[in-house]
Image (tube, rainbow, N blue to C red; front, side, top):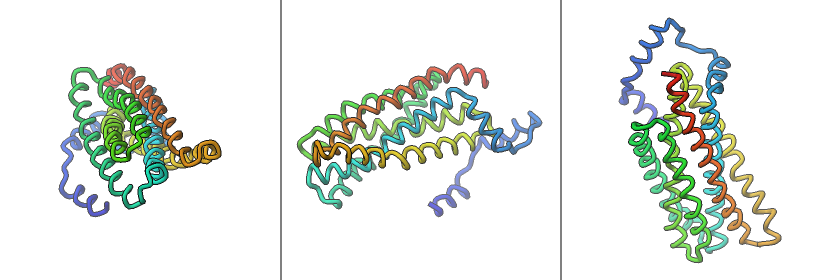
Length: 248
């Protein structure tokens, strides 16, 4: 990570940086914005708050499902940790890469016609992933389950690029870093911090009734919950045009 950061620092150029500095100079405003002022500015955007809910819910489900899907393959399909790491890693890695790139492409293409559609791909992708994930978790065959998981993994990755792109567009230039940091903070706090824990607690609660199958039923519920971030991405998309027009 550090090596890559150094490469980006010395090699990658940002042609918009000079434009941003010119805008700040023309506005006669200081380049630095106090932390609390920047945070209040970011949270004053209703669209950003909706985006925060959407991104946090998506992260919560992503971390929770990823953690317990590996356990699911071990308990239900009798795979070893090494086998799960290899095959699920391939599905998750390739599906995630394809979904991230495709989600950005779709946001650029359809967002150019109507800016609300920047978030249409994440909303639709999250919704489409629900039935496919249910089929995967219900599959009696682990190879078929892995194949079926590729598409929901891809669809659930549509939101990465459009989320941060929309967040950067909703706030003034001097508050963009705070906007990105706020998204990351809540996605990690809620997603990484609570997602695996919550689903693990549910699995323990269901274990007396369902035994080793408790993980499967938890993942059924997690799949259905994908409609929650889909809803918030859709609602945020409805607000995008209005707030971006006001900002322009």
